Amino acid sequence: MAITTLGIIGVGLIGGSLGLAAKARGAASRVIGCAPASEHETILASGAVDAVYSDWHELAMSSDIVVIAAPPVTTISLIPQVLDVSEGVVSDVCSVKEPVMGAAARASQPNRFVGAHPMTGSHQRGADAARADLFDGCTVVLTPTEATDAHSRHVIETLWMSVGATVITMSADAHDRAVARVSHGVHALAAVAASLSRDDQTALRLASTGYRDTTRIASSDPDMWAEILLLNAPAICRVLDDAADELAGLRCLLQRGNRADLRAWLSDIKAGRDAWLKGQGRDTR
Image 1 (cartoon, rainbow, N blue to C red):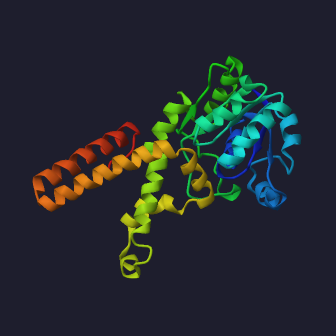
Image 2 (cartoon, rainbow, N blue to C red):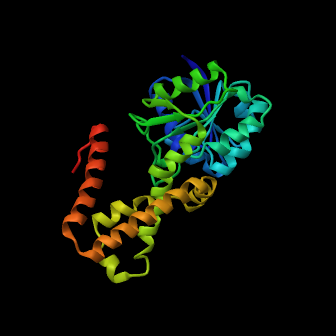
Image 3 (cartoon, rainbow, N blue to C red):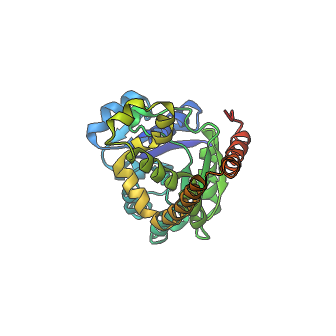
């Protein structure tokens, strides 16, 4: 499928990477973006888009596909407005889908909206961190509803496959519960891990790769992550309850001092993670 013009509202890490990938793989004849004027120079220098606008209305009216890659709350507010202006297919990249699909359902033409979430990213942000290979081999979740027409779904599925992603489909509710366990809750726990030593300069002087790797995503944008955590709060709270149970169980193992039981607990967790890594074709070391 040849896309004449792909419009991206919000040309940061994800939006910029989508633009770079679409251009590199010939998925669109032209890629245009929308961002604040203060970001235009950086965005154009990144090569992510062919032109950039400050007003999303002009972009929406000129694009066959509009992908909203803005922060979650902004995305939710823009969806009905963009659907009213655009005649093309509209999608997003937000990591919380139920509020997004709810916003689409309130629009005058919800059939042209396809919720999407690429399961990739970085703690970095901005167009200058964008990469054309960011979506190579990554999973993109689509969350169509009964109102979504088959053409719109096919268009967005083809777009993501054309930039190297694998596409799967699930309900918005199932998506939000799943990402609470493998993304949002993990982010919250990484922040907790970083908080344990933030005022302990003696400990931080000894911190090395284990601390760095475990807490890496705690360096992500606080404004964006505050939005994400609040939008998916019920599912994340259930994950935190489960994490509290796991910690309580570990505490009991340590207090009992039974090495065999502790080793069995660690081995079981290691086996599960190693199996996941093997399924991803990654080194288990």
